[in-house]
Length: 163
Length: 85
Image 1 (tube, each protein chain N blue to C red):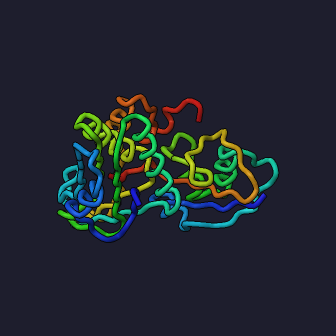
Image 2 (tube, rainbow over the protein chains, first blue to last red):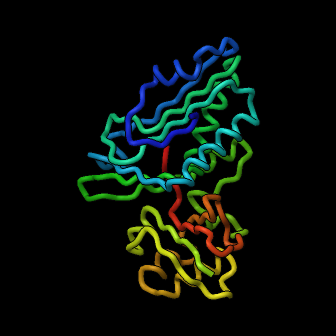
């Protein structure tokens, strides 16, 4: 399955092997891994809890994959997002994309991450010395998605005048 | 009309529950109507679903807006801006 939401860790090498397996048309693989940092907004982070919306999350990631496949001639896509309790250094998210040439692989990988950041229903809660706090959405992430011609009002839904 | 309601992250914590089944009056036709109807419960509901508050909504797992219509039995979710990745 190309889209997975799981508690378990993942292995980049194994995932890329699976993505390329037996496909002689693949000439390029690009991948991105997001990891847990130990500092956020000036505070040290000892752990992070990732919540999601079971059912909607998977549909959202599948929609994002489909949007990428409409834009570029892709030969394979893997999106894995972890949920539950994570520590600094842990891997959070993997996006890997296979195509014939590097241009499509690089672009689609970045597109999928930009789309995921503003549209997939995940929420991070950080443990800091001052207590646990929900991470704030960033307007810069909405801007990153708009570069691809997709409107996003995640960080500030009140900007969407139709609402 | 019966609706399945879901709350996530900071909204879930504020209203003190993650899920409920609600029987709403006939005049509640859209997601925006439902948001206003829930606000009338007062307290944490009025605060967490307040107008102008950054809040996202979904109907049957698809992103919704205030004017998205409701149907009997549908699942409606309220949650803060997403922060995955």
